[in-house]
Length: 114
Image 1 (spheres, one colour):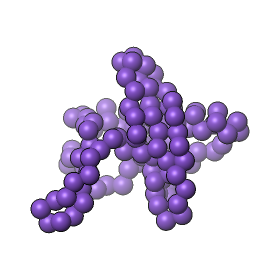
Image 2: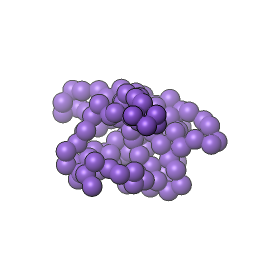
Image 3: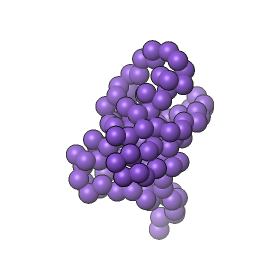
Image 4: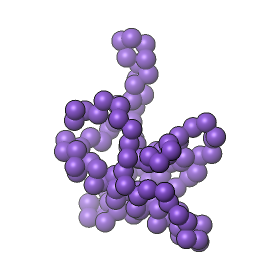
């Protein structure tokens, strides 16, 4: 079971970044800290902690510290994190907030499984 233990909102009208959050993976007694929550149109996803770097061409890249070798397991974990975040937001706001899409839908950016 995954629980969202912390959410800090980030409000910027021109940014897909909506906040940072921590998740407790209870079966492993492990907490993922400083994950980033994004929304862009109907798409929602969680980025895991990462390190910023500069490519040989001068572009900015991000190296994720967590990587799933199996795409289906990655999608399942994303869905569980989004469900946990939705529960946290519902509890925090004490309302029946409608969340647009609880399925992980990250825009295609040349994922490593392709």
